[in-house]
Image (cartoon, rainbow, N blue to C red):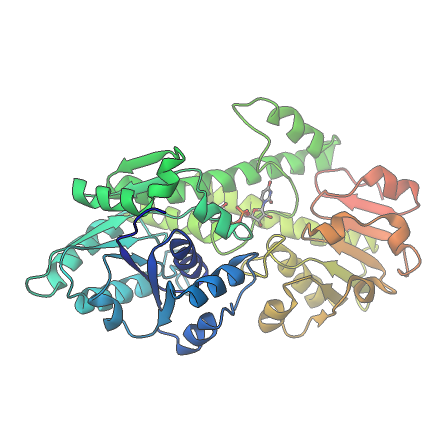
Length: 446
Ligand code: UDX
């Protein structure tokens, strides 16, 4: 086995940090995860996670048991010990605004720098930040470091997808590092030696490019989704089939088929907030026009939620009051329990606010959704949700829902009406079985 020399700390043990810490331990490093929340630290130490991520609890338990991974609330434990300190705290959207809230990144960096007594350590930012943050933090580190301690800073954005977080961290499709010295880059090459041994592309660049790569990637993905959804608005009006259109343009490998699934649009903790933060940042820089198109991307996306609700109204002859509607799937995507900015939850809440008797079922998301919208009716099974429903609306494409056939539901529902807002079911089959069946991106003839 490779000789492992570096002690690694990860500051912030949320989604990104907990995954990164566990994966660093899996690579053979000794790792300490630090968080200000004692409850989180206690449950992580038992291998329990406050969110759903396949494979991660097992990996954490494995390395807590092997002694390679520990969690603490005490920053001073890592200050005298760590060689590489990853900052993995959140950068949420500011309350009442569209920019990124850097309070946690700043607080974590300041507290870390003050605690570092081991000279030659490297601080590595992983959080998604507005361009210019790394340069500012570099200066902050130099100003605030303890006397006699040499410290540097690098930026290394993370591209992990929820549901595939472990896989994406252990086997990334590329590694991007922004550094100011060759020694810092060399240290990061040591951290990622295993991936580099597999010829993973290594992009070594400056701070600004490293910061921008992350938001550019997310802006591109959001644009792809809203691009196909803009065409869905057209096919809904003139006729045509949006899925066939996506397949056909996707065969052109300059375009590619991925992220061209039309439906109720994107959500989650990254894409929506990152495109808003990017626009805000470039506007601050005086470049109001260069990212203006992202506003349209956001608007197209938000219109999809309204369209799903409009379809529900159409199928119920514009009268939803008191009607039982089953909403299937309220996480922002399958294999996650994350309901942040989730299109399905938004659709369910809009139907509820319009007076419908909404019954929500999601394999993982009910608990988190109930914290945000306690008044919706949450049930523990698909059967309970659809029983006596006047309308079924599919808003997240969990396998359990993709496998549904008309025969599975016909004896349970009160009326055979279905809105497939993710375009994952075979419309012709449902229509042939007597269902009034609507999708997004297809003309609905009632
Ligand atoms: C995203 C990026 O993919 C990841 O690289 C980055 O690090 C964090 O943000 P994630 O938020 O986990 O990851 O979700 P992703 O798989 O990208 O899906 C985002 C949203 O787009 C979901 O709501 C999904 O349902 C939607 N989507 C995706 C579509 O509507 N259509 C598609 O074709 C693909």
